[in-house]
Length: 118
Length: 108
Image (cartoon, rainbow over all chains, first blue to last red; front, side, top):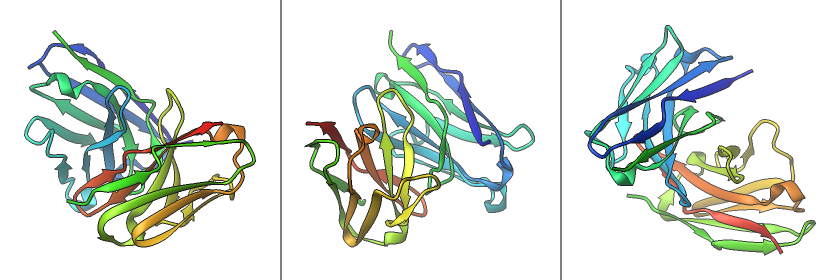
């Protein structure tokens, strides 16, 4: 059974950092690209970024709103994807989802709430 | 940058009725890169349709997708009580993903 279990959310002050983890099982993690999507309270879905598999160089792409502040990485030996969020802003407050894939997002984590507030 | 506009914002229907949801792209896109998701309150989204018309694993055949160019449609042939939710279309390019604003299908 494919599972994506997220951890690491919470309350953080503006300007601080937070790292989210997405621990996966049930599939060969190294074969898949991984994507992060967020959803601000009461709003729609917004793409954050993705990381390609190592076959494609584990390269990353980011939405303009987070580029230069957020970094996606992966540890294929542990089947975990990470989202490092630096210089957080109040507008980054959202539920963050990790997902399997880069276009077709066929499995999703449960989501984790990140609240940026002083 | 491509923008996806979904309509209507809200669709009020009764169980058993047919629902038609629209997703319009600001420029022509390949239908191979259009997907649809369903999201229920407090839950993660669920993949319904990929490549515009292919149902994901386990998706009932009352859900169907179609379209090409700039106009894409998700049809729910006969609404079941569990189908009421928010639906999002998505375009996936080589270096970005774009979501539409969503259509809420609510019980009339």
